View: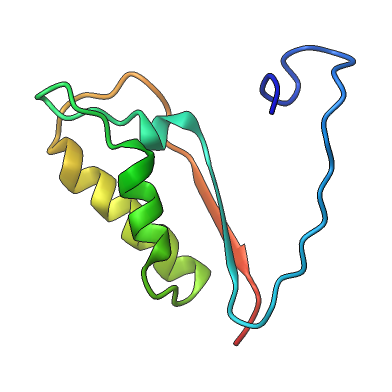
Length: 93
């Protein structure tokens, strides 16, 4: 871990190599996803996101849609103060 990419010049980051098997999906998201806030003040949080991502996967587009719909339902129209960005990609089954 370290600061977000591009924020501080010259910071080294650890590299990792992962092999995606058939049907694997990768989800990249900004903090706006886990910090999405309901009117009650509760955050969407990592636990909710991890639970969604642990469900049967489907296509990258299915995963993206499921997460974004869950966040929208959770916040219930409450105004947000951060961007919400989610990128998913994967391999064919």
